[in-house]
Length: 305
Image (cartoon, rainbow, N blue to C red; front, side, top):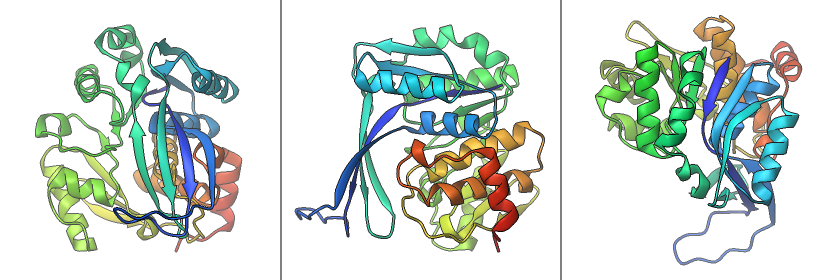
């Protein structure tokens, strides 16, 4: 069983030709509302790929919260430990330009209401999970304690370090799989990541700090996998991106499913790249998450070289 402890965010997605500069007003093309949040995206991605998944987190007792609960039920996710609070469900403003690139601001609200009392309620889940998926959209102190507990229980942790903040070597040494994007890799390592050589050096530095496997998602450049023993790149699938929201989340959900099924690291990353390649071709976060049959057909018919 994969356990996702994470966030729910209702995305308000505004599309525009270009991102406005400071002080600039630009005319948008459309606005849509999509359920998302890194935790929810990763959880539902894993479930749609056939993973046995349960989620722990916090929702408001409001219309957005009810929509998320229905979505989890429809996706076959165990939501026993998704709790309610007096704070509103989190929302995000997502800007997407003509190239499909995004800028995101999250107002965490209910996500930050998940505290240590709630952590005690899910301690047994952590102990008997095959893998824990975490992000940094919830309270940082609670997330760090989850990492410490999982390390003590011998449960692998997949940490998607977004939104990125510097983490100390104690925590990094307890992370089994770290999945930053290029920007997050630079923040975590404190090193430049403009070239492939710099990206490898930054990932190696995180290995030196204790991360067992660093899997950096680099968009069209694919995914860079670094351990203390080796580094290699798994190519991305060449597709036309419509919306990159949830691309990283779908990658993480797929990676967790593949690894818990016993795939090799290269096989797992290729599978995750395929999921992300499909995701970016569809607008919205959760609406863009595909099924296992769709991903496997994509791998059979679409080259990633």
